[in-house]
Image (tube, rainbow over all chains, first blue to last red; front, side, top):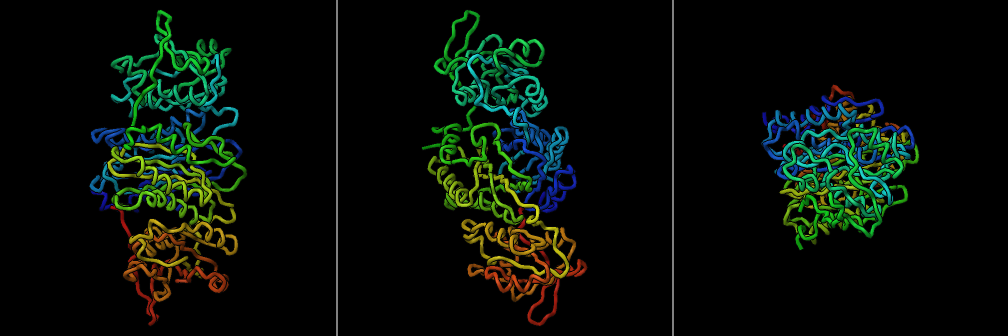
Length: 297
Length: 297
């Protein structure tokens, strides 16, 4: 069945039927705007991520996983702020000759992970496009005391990463689990000074923390956790799409965090800005590093 | 200058520099999430609209106007709920060989209308795309008492439209003024029962109100305001992209609204659902109408 047979409104109806709304959604899909009742004065988090065929996935990837990824990258952004994801808007740019079955699989991927992370899909837009394009906007909430941004790193902080890095573009970029639970655990139990998700590669994303926090870093080369799927150490540094959390905690919490939490690895420490980005190997000779990762252009 | 010379982060820096943030934006562009302080318990409005080259505009259109339209359609959605637009996220899918000057013009169009309507651009995403694609997500607020949706029309209501309809796709679709002020005026001074913006064409959008409100309508054919740029009456009914407000008010307010507000036109009245969508001409013979407008597929 071609999309043309279903029509835009048929497609919207289809989406609407497959997505239940929580009581706080006064109006979800099917009006000009989604209407949300806000309960308290937490911070609201807003993020959006656009994924495009040929850039972020290929036409051979499973449509269910493409839909899943579209939402997962925004979940990862909310996680990077230590927030709780709440609502999402989904804009779909669909090829004219796409089959309804294909679009249904995309929607299935979106709704499954939305359900898994208790996110309400509250609206969206559909357009024609030459390449499949999915743009997800997500609204999250975070308690003021838990908010973690890129600009909070302090000299002396320990630098940590969840999981392991590299090789994600060979497949894991479609199936990774956004670190929402992990981020919440960290924020509740430790003082997270700065946090970011590793989307463009460890070095590049770490570079964002350094720049925003006006600090430098020394990385321990041998400590960086390399994923089994990585084909080189370089991939762990700069391939990107890992969607792990990269964060810093105060010096006095380094030991406890390292000891108590098995799924994080200490990979360096924050130093003064003038040192830039340095790496030490076994010989303890720090060397300068070029923080280049994936570039869209 | 090609985008490749500037790079993704250079482009983000460029956007960041050109966009100031209001005091309520704790964190705008340049982190994983935008962080907003919410002041009260108004409803939050969320909407997103994706515009794609070859569908919603052409490569010959001025890039400044393309950027403007991207934001304007979301402003129109916020207006349709009688809300005040506040924050926007902008996802840009840009061609690899686009010039920086071209992208700057798009950004200029976006930021100019954002400033005009006091909207903060608080984040976004940039990706490569074969066709220029802009997805805008907007957050607005509305007082509970002013919220206007599609489902509030009552039998006996008068049906009104702002401005005039038809011919927008010949150019006005790039330059229209979102009816935010008008919607706020109407909500403050009248009891707006149902409201929608005319994006898919009068008949189709009216159809949404009928469906959601479970009512029918009788339209006065000779009252429908046809824009000077329209080439036929049919265009006023179903060409779409007018972005005028279509709304209903209680029977007792019809006369006052008609008399006092020069920029609205009464075009019909709400009847029971069983009558469907009917039109009367000079002969007062109601006839059935097919509510078809623009279809994306």
